[in-house]
Length: 153
Length: 66
Image (cartoon, rainbow over all chains, first blue to last red; front, side, top):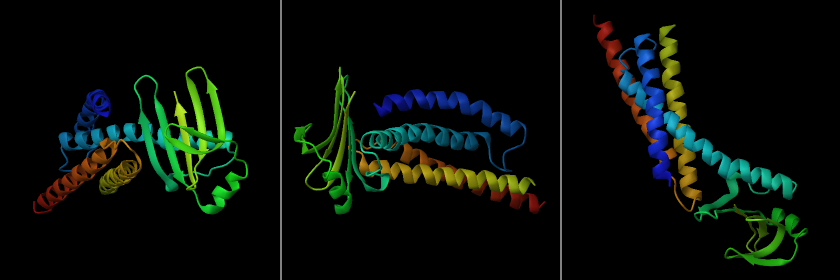
């Protein structure tokens, strides 16, 4: 999937970056000795890497942040204690994010635990569950103090 | 002035490359489906920055020698 995206974004990146590099070279705005090809390659790598990175910032940081703020009332899982992220499925996509919580954080969350649930190969107490049409969201706290956020989209 | 602009160019490219590389390594570590594009683009940016810096130093040395 990423390879297909890379072909599309990569070609688009060449179309965007090539004229910019040539223009900068023509205006003599590039450092002395740096050719348009070298600068263009550098800009291309920054642009393509930045586009992919922004997509992952949304998937791995922003979306879990919103979900936790909305349904847990605070940030328990952060990028620093994230342990696993996976996106699977073709038409029914399943996004799963797992965080390792400290015992104190887990104890705070365990106080608001609902019923024990088993879903998507995970088991634990349910902190939040929502289902509407083909979409669903489940937030679980497992016995090993891992917080799991599962989204079906 | 031109020298400051050149330095900014290389500093920006190095910072961007480092950010992409570190973020890419983090994605690689946490994701079940490692997505290497960000990491590879970061490494590529740093490599091209180094090549550009080398070319820049050579051009300046040539200019200085007349």
